[in-house]
Length: 241
Image 1 (spheres, one colour):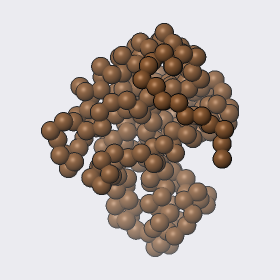
Image 2 (image 1 turned 180 degrees about the horizontal axis):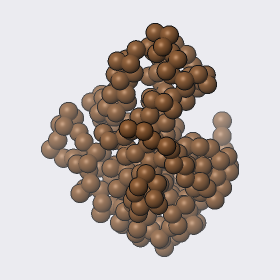
Image 3 (image 1 turned 45 degrees about the vertical axis):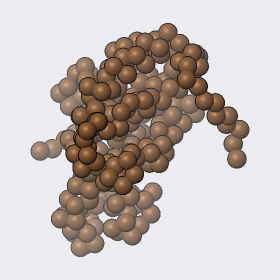
Image 4 (image 1 turned 120 degrees about the horizontal axis):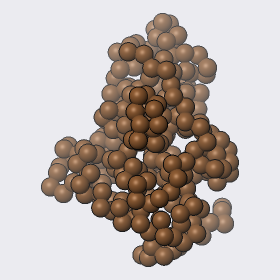
């Protein structure tokens, strides 16, 4: 049991002085679209006004808060909120890689019949169909995934199938449940806890890029160190073709 107290509200005024703000507001599916037609990018014209409105309230009520954006398409929404909230770049991130990576780790663990906690993996780039899954950064118990491929515990084709399922998991869940919520909630808690408790976890999140991967002034997913001051390090991975 915890001492947490949950209070409902329909007023932005209750954000005043908040340490952490988690933004989930917005449409999860475009009206008139079937579940099979679901696409995060369809939500852009629906959710952008919501981010602009929320940004103004954050600026007035809790400008020192650490902001975690969940609303899709998350890399665009976190940029909009950054531009309209006035929070510093180290105090705002978007959910993406933590969630995508957890799914990838689970699928690999199921195939190899190992504990998911023993699987380490990294996904960078946009949260969506353009995410980049990096096979050479996947390890199982510290052992490179390639060793398991070489020993015929898993094939390259099976790895590619796992990659495809990871990319399409959200669509799979939308078709079954209307919207993912359990895994995103767990990922959000991990991100917020690392900030509140100054844990300094290395987590893949959407952050403001300043030259990393040849991009500037846009948000994208890459490993970050999240501690008591927010984003304390932005880690750029060396990519190959």
